[in-house]
Image (cartoon, rainbow, N blue to C red; front, side, top):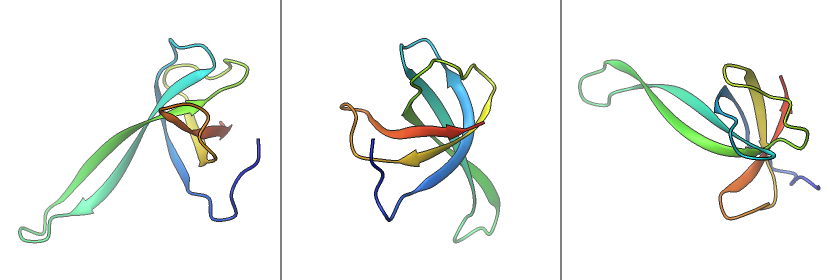
Amino acid sequence: MSTKTNTKTLRGTVVSDKMDKTVVVEVGRFVKHPKYKKFYTISKKYHAHDENNQYKIGDEVEIVETNPISKKKTFIVVEK
């Protein structure tokens, strides 16, 4: 599968591996509230392609954006 030149790379934790060739990766961002100046974490879940079903729950992985693989999957797991 080809990847784009302007690819988005994210690091996160695998939270689900129940699907075949797919893992759900939770990525957290540390942001500052504009008014109250308090820092807090925002997390978002991404579906990522895992060809060999080698990643399990709790693994720290890096995912890269690619052309759409399915309706929800636009990322590929690159490394652990």
